[in-house]
Image (cartoon, rainbow, N blue to C red; front, side, top):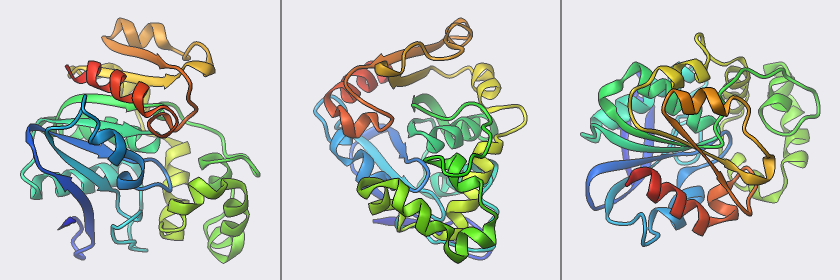
Length: 254
């Protein structure tokens, strides 16, 4: 376990690091998740092993600190991650990022281009969403006011999340979880999709084949983004089909 202070108050991001060759690979989890739990199996897969790999927990999540004074915007997450990578002496990393982590990774590449050489986005959020009471995921969490969520709304989210997601969501700070969800559904200006279209590094977007055609895939591909369906999986591609995920990610990073 490694760590670095990433705020002026000294709040620390922590990551599990696997030794290996450069370029480093940085794995970033989604909302309410943790990178060691979601990525270890595939990070050590024979097709992906051998590179220095940092399985990072974003601020407010997993093993990292959970400050209540942090805003948890996508830009804040990206800047804190950038500070951790600089402390780890990482440059030109291959970033593999899931869901909200993919949104953070796009912002990271746009704001700190020297830190990112390739992007593999795993069913990442690219567009703003509308909060919806009772919905699963970020839209449902963002439908609460912060005080309402912290006071007890989190229990309703726990009951909807299911055993797998709650096993890592319970580690997140409640303010961190709520603010991260609010800013994820609000998105960025320009949107994460527009930021992704404007990047020049090699980019691959993985999504579940069962979802059908990915919205806006033609425009992404026209801008040089490889859009790749992965079979036999849902949103958590690396957990549902680790073999398929490893093959698709290795091809993206080849």
